[in-house]
Image (cartoon, rainbow, N blue to C red):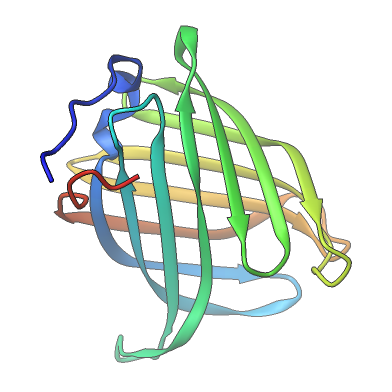
Length: 169
């Protein structure tokens, strides 16, 4: 399949396109700190949104994968005036809608809406920062959950390791 042309509305977030891999750290008052590996793929199909998938896995002290952690998937829509909407879905019964802004190669997002199924853990808000720094995708995630206020939860540095599959999205 031919690679579709990038929709012009996506120019401000086109730097995200591709497959990114790396490692990060996580922690929260209710859990032990941990190291994780991650793969993020941003793709497109020519329409005015990016597709997004992320998967993480626990790493041991030697950097070996131990077991899967979180998975999320969604869509990133660029709006006028560098505004951005992001819809994310998690297999744990949580759906998030973020709103935010793109300034050069920096993205800041805050939850506008969080919906949970009856069996999902309590989670009420998120704040995410993404940025392109020296060619790497850096990100940080703060969350408010299980009775805790909004605070640091995870961060990572990812290297671009490939392009998204043609027509992905």
